[in-house]
Image (cartoon, rainbow, N blue to C red; front, side, top):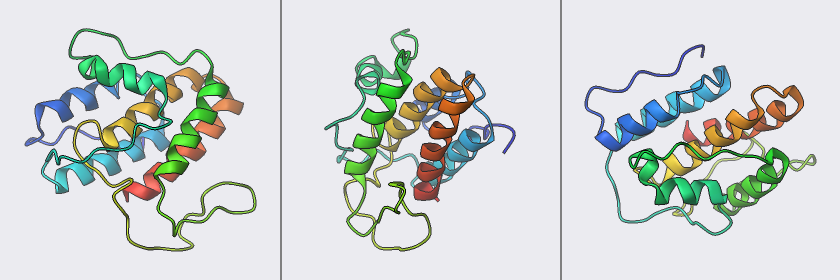
Length: 168
């Protein structure tokens, strides 16, 4: 996907603002595909804000800072990831903790995609602000830090692809 998705006409303000922020820097086709999948999911859920949220346990601090800053609504810039390798480890720990029990990892330690299916439990599938948006934002912050480093960007793309699979 060469371009980010357009903002749906009936999107809530929080979504429109977040999509605008997550497209300030074009991070390429993999991330644009994740944005498109997230946009479809939020649209299907009518941009609702259910009461349950994603677990913050192990979440990268940059995401917490961004949430505390009202997703940039208070004029704060997006957080900067200064140590991408460290962020990667923290991010994967958080992402791993959100996965349902039926998802399995392959021999290489990455999540298997398409090998097994089951019910998505309350740990991950939460739409609305401070929910899956947090995952998208976390990838955006990480992607901005590695976009010009091919070896680091490849590892980031693996994460983006896994998130896209979950969102689809």
